[in-house]
Length: 607
Image 1 (tube, rainbow, N blue to C red):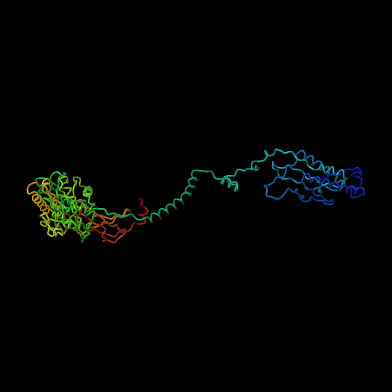
Image 2: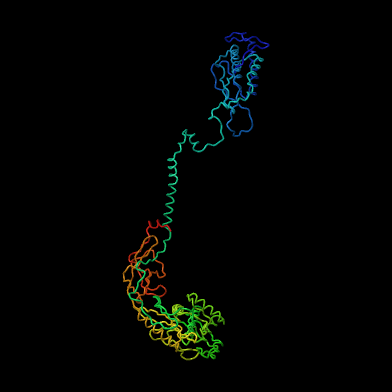
């Protein structure tokens, strides 16, 4: 802002010299004095405003660039938020200042010869913290004048601090400062000046498809990989042929006894029926069959050997010496015999003293503990009408039924040591030094191969028997029992009735082909929906008698089925019988190649 020239106390008026540049000495002195005073005023303005004005020379005839401002030092430089310049004075003050500047410009021109164009540019500050700054004119630089006037005018040029103006309300919303971060879509829209498109159901659906489709594809890939490397399920054999076969003809009549109990079965095929009420009755020495079974379960004898050896105690010798009417074998304390010889002694000559000796040897002298084992094994075999109270059967409280003893007969004949002993008519005793005979006089006639006689006054005559017949090259085992025969001689009566049943059963046994070689009897199921047929490798006969119905079953023979194999590979066995024991069996083989499940089948696997 230009300073106004005025007369000082010791000088002339502004018009005291030529207007075109004529200078008097007094005028020059005043000018010099005016410059010094102006400088003093300018320093005062810098202190007050923090802005140093630039003095324009006398002969500069054009506007100069905006002066460089120098801010007061306020301390060490640090990063600060963007700083707004302080808002100037109010509009009324600005107008007064502009008017004063114009007057000063005229005076300066008259005194110093400066034109209107020689004034400095006007600085317009940026908006302040509280709003846009008021526009203020740039004060013109002072011309040389008297010191008093210059100082007064310089002081007048310093702007007074402006009162805060409430200009924030006038700002548009876009210029307001906000600390709230914008959402990502809104921020993107503001940066690109493009508002987000409106949300619609179609856009939502498309977005969801874009998000979920890659995830679904990834899951499908993982599922396919897992399915392809999963272990294959075990294959199974399924029967497709008829499950049963019935022999033509009526059920045959059997020569049953007229008293007591009786029953006959063919092992693995079925029963020809029974006679009498199957209830517990005394069975005599037939109880020794369970004694032998228990010993062989507790002390197995390997094929071709005679098993462990036991020492005869004093009680066994005393039982022989005081036998009376009991069946015994001569023994002496300290003698050693094998398990096999002990079984020979109890099964052929029915030695009671050896039966009790075996019980004491097995259970450390406690016969009662051995009897508990006998009853435990009877329960395992399903002998519901059986109770053992002694190892020899001499006691009348040892009771059973014909059907229960047939169950035991099937089980005990599976022991090679036992079956090889009971088919003997006699044996050489190492304790007595003589041959001991078998009381089952049917051995070895009529195909009879055992098992045990038993007789007491209370029990009558009893025989648990076993016989064989070869049918189509296979031995069929006939097991039966005749109990409670009191017609004298009781043991001979039981033997005769048993022989009649054996001969009739052997007569009735026949064979009929139920499956021919090459017939499809089943298939291998790989567990994933694919099947491969299996065929019989030879004719399958069914052994039975008129009216008998037998069952057909397909089994893998205890071996795991392959996942792939060539045609003709044997994969199981077809059996024909009652399903409870030995039966007629023939191998079955694959009719065509067995292939592993395809990749598609693996993918479709659910379980």
